[in-house]
Length: 100
Image (cartoon, rainbow, N blue to C red; front, side):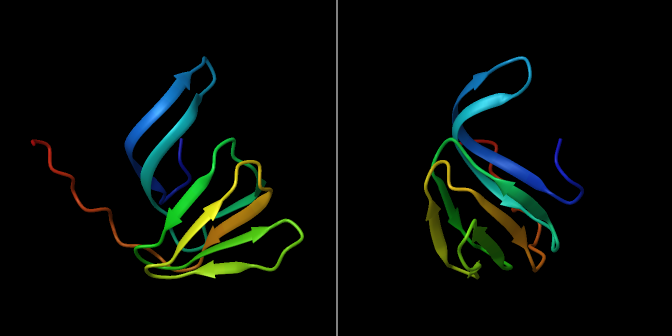
C-alpha cells in the first residue's frame, strides 16, 4: 500500500470506505524517507502539516517551492495542485500507548 520506507499512524478518520479505497477526512502521522516524492496531485480536504523531523518540500503548480523544516507548519487548501517530497530522513515513529 505504501511506498518503500513510508509508514503512517492514523489518529482518527471520518472515512467512507468503497470497494477501491477509503475516502474522507483524517489525521495521521507520516514517516517519509529521504527522496520520497509524489507527482502533481490534489486532495479533497485541506491538508495541515507539522514537521517533527527532516524537511518537507511542497511545490504548488505555477509557484516556487516551499520548504518546511523542524517545527514548521503549513495548511494547503483542498484541490490545490502540487507536488511534494521529503529531502531528509525522519526517525521511526514513537510507540503509542495501548491503554488509557
